Length: 471
Image 1: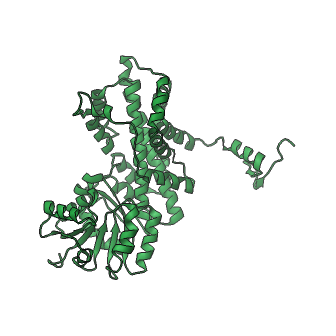
Image 2: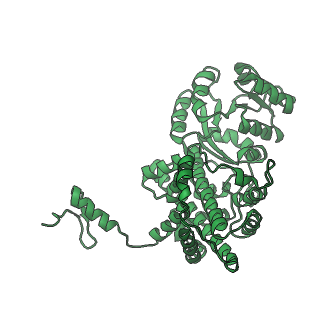
Image 3: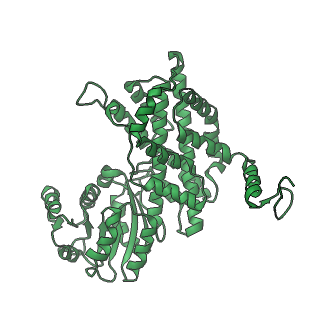
């Protein structure tokens, strides 16, 4: 520490993530000042965790002045409150050379605008995606900072200490690029997370309603999946979820949870961005659609009385079906990642962030919600060439293509039970579509030209053409 009387860093916003991040930073040997608009929250936090190197302030000016210059302040507030903190609360308290990091789930375009405003005042600004939930914030998250390189260099010694570790023991943090790069990468991360969660939910649906597995069987099945190529954080936590008994009844807790899923908007942002850039992102879009559909519980309850169909497999075929679902889930996971990386590649062309796909894959190896063994392979491949589509690598094809028959069969059995498996089907259709040299889009273009004179190109001649159809 440069000055024993001053804090190395300040953290504003003591919600769950802010509290745990402050504790993480403090535990790494840094002196931390904390502030929350609700004074009682600061008081309670300091009474529980504070000491001479973790100090709380009720006055914002005193909080700012307690930090060594150039000041480094992390703000951990809801995205809709960031501008008020920057433009109203901190306005006039900061000095040229100070630096701020927004660690919330902000929309990347708002991050760009905030950086421009603050840079004009000589203040460095980072928009940093933080993944890992409350446990990650406390024990080591995956950190995705972007914006001012000068600000990143100032924050880096602290970020590198508090971050999770990748499979080689390196810190899961890297400079993502300029402008809104950090929050853009976090947005795509969350989009992949939406897709991955929906794929797991659909695999659960298949195993439970087609395979007839009970909770104990589901826990054992996903435990076995987690020992193989599907090893990941989300598969790991399913084992605990399926085993969790309900304290209020004799059954399992999962059976008592209302099937209406919430969302905070990052999946929707990712889908909207894909539409804006013209990138196919069906897995994420179907995951968002599934959450939207789940919200109509009353309507589904009324229509569900029709009980469309139910099938179950003979007991002798269940083990084989588990293998098929594992293959489908693995192929779909690769497809979801491929779509996400395709969006990142398009964003790099459009915005020039300076994204490094190998580094993105590396920092996703630890701390974050989508951490998975697969990311080791992605990191190696992107180090070779980050201009390719993921499916162009022979190593990916060797893993992906053998899943297709089992994947299709699992979906067919789910179809017989009339189960909604849109994300898994969309993931497969993405594979089919991108490996197919010809498509039905020629008919789309013919229809567009027929009713709107939108013209078309030919496969055998240069130029643009229009036909007076039927003439």
